[in-house]
Image (cartoon, rainbow, N blue to C red):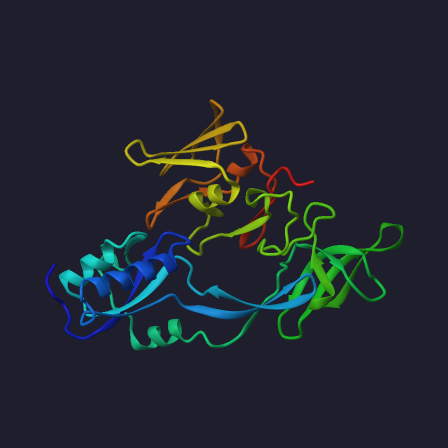
Length: 305
């Protein structure tokens, strides 16, 4: 690769999901060990402060603004390209054919300016919630609307004689309800009883913006469930094993075989940016309780009591 620029620019690097900080640490060590401080100047994983509503309480946390991406400030040469591209966890630069394309000044400002606080409501439209205070304390209902300006929710509650009535409540007046009396925030970061291991936590996987088929990343799904996942690149198949079931999906098609029987996925299994994405309906065949929402899939692993 020939040198293209003697001026440092910001570039976007795609990583495996969950590897962003590892890529940052590894790349920074490579720069130091190889004396490349004159080529690679900065590595960023943009994060933002978030105020989450968890069980009626506001909790300040941090989250990645662009999951699966790392920003690198560097002078692009064959040497710097090679070091970044071959960092463990990196799947490539963002650009046509993985050819690095520098960000514009406006794009840099947008991606690095993460100082503003935001609110993560912890509930979504269609979510079941329990009211914690007021005249309707302990009533449960379904969220119909979220008012982000006024911090209000409209909840449809079943009242007397089975009649449903929409009521407006404050955001901090409710908590999520998952599987009967077990309450967890939908991002699964809340307290979990000691008898439940990590693979039994309820969790949410967000549909990628490019997907029109409600697809989720296979590796992350299996990792969170404690399921087996094998991607045979040569054969073009992904095999998932979970609780006595085996599902085999063919990448680039809607072909699905579960326990030896052909089934329909209602959407193709695709490879994108070094990851395989599958249609959420596969969870049904593996007997994984789940709920498809507008922008995400909520998964409630079997075994919760």
